[in-house]
View 1 (tube, chains in turn cyan, orange, green):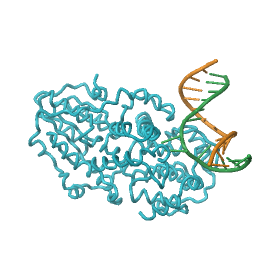
View 2 (cartoon, chains in turn cyan, green, red):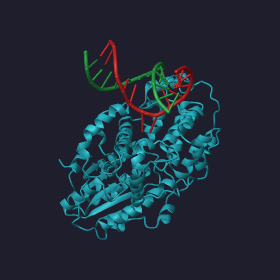
View 3 (cartoon, helix red, strand yellow):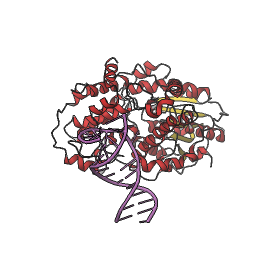
View 4 (cartoon, helix red, strand yellow):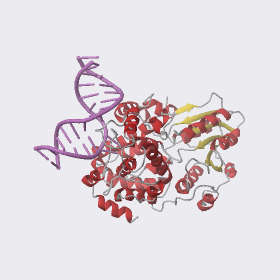
Length: 453
DNA sequence: ATCGGCTCGCGCAA
DNA sequence: TGCGCGAAGCCGAT
């Protein structure tokens, strides 16, 4: 079995449709024209059937928790992707609507429909609905995890230490980059079915009836070209220092690939190869693989196997019990959600983190932890802290609404972690404090920087 | 500056 | 059944 076949699952038992007009790739998660195994699988089918390829993207104005910040970043990437798809000789169709419905409708003329993979519950449901209603073979191709989730482990893992050996064991079978397949039949004229012109982004954004309260991020551009530029400078300047430099909140040596990964504008496998082939030192490369393979895919393992990945009740029992035992501990100050969201607490470090999040749509990972842990201390109940953390994550972060968002928020409350000495409010759940920040970093420089954003 | 103690659940050796 | 050990913890002692 070749590497593409190992990433592919049939979602129904239908056969390819006879007398079809094209092969359809319904693009959803892997929003890129290169390093995309779903696209190559669809190209393979197109050549095999002697048909042209249509790539469909459905822009859903009702996508859960999406606002104009997310759509802007996504459309910056999609405009580039549409062009690159067309240059390969496939048609790129962009439609407004509910993704599986539009895919079923367009798919009536398709011999085969290929989908990429998503992990959150609505993304799984979309693929199931498509497979049930398509009336032809529907395949799903894993392109946004290096190791397909079931191949790494057949169950929900309790911690990185149990997941790590499993994902590393499976890794060698999934290291081949998808081979680029040339299309034999060009798709002239088929792209006439679009109802959105991605080249005119402002017009496209205006068509969306969505939340406009969070402005687009000025400092980070979406799309593959921006991702590659950012990656190149990371590989040259930061990867060598990544080993022990990645946690510094002021002198940052991080790649900031998470927004691009979230929208599938870059593939985790191409990042893996870029980093392991890079110069520098072993420390940096090892640490990066730990983040991108072990940590990132542990988050995918979590949302895949924990049906209630976005519920407080899915936290480990020991964590819920200890938080429950301390729920009536006095809090120094309890803030309203409005005060929190505006960054108006008495903790300047916390406010600075909130500001970085609001303005840049991103937060350094160490400050994500501090921000989230303090939220437990600044709210009345851990349930409310959990809901607030998810709400703010998904509203402001360009990389929010991701498997990582749910795993990272749950980590704040003990997921994938162990018990620690019992303290007020937190119980045995790991805590973080301002004194810890001061001990490790020039946190005043961080505050000055954030306030200048 | 560095170290031990605190603490939980898993996986593995015995 | 016991033991070692783990993503970033904190605190107090040296």
